[in-house]
Image (cartoon, rainbow, N blue to C red; front, side, top):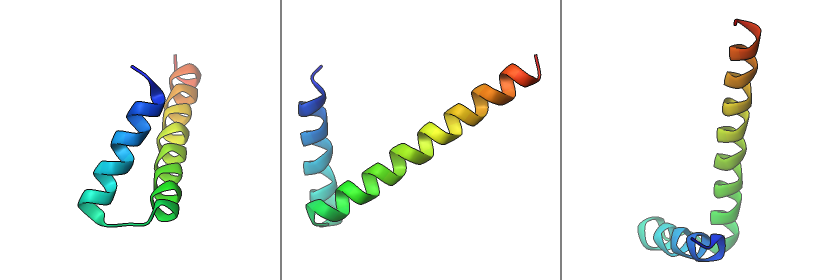
Length: 51
């Protein structure tokens, strides 16, 4: 699967369901990705610490 295609589909989906502008979608999407990555990294660190 190509990331460009996935990103385009998510963009279209968000526009359809939330009616946001592209700039807002990007900001929201980036924020969500950062939160997901941070929580993943945090979980990995805790897993390593408490082995």
